[in-house]
Length: 117
Image 1 (tube, rainbow, N blue to C red):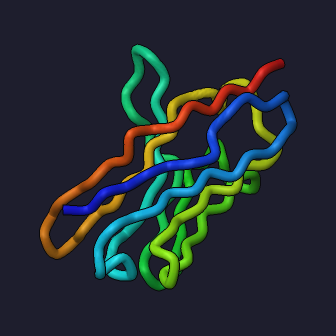
Image 2: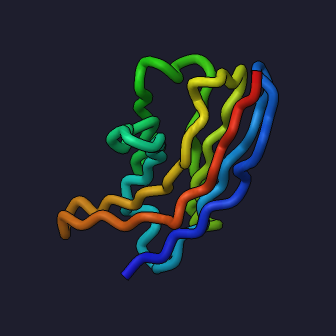
């Protein structure tokens, strides 16, 4: 069982920045593929970014060049630095841990990000 706790959501103006953090339990954090997803009411949860244990990252096109995912394996923490935020980035952001060997996914409780115009 992996527990994930997100921090850092909030209200920010258009063009502003926020950094989300997600702390994970467990002894094998470096083996997890970590990701950030987001969801708005009435829509499916959308993958925003992922990072492997070795640091390889991927992004959805809409956030490329604005968001950066990173991880600190010593602290069991993954981050999402969000710059140049837009109103369309408003959503609940969820941290995800994917354990490839077990085919399992774990989710945090979500943190609200609201970008005002």
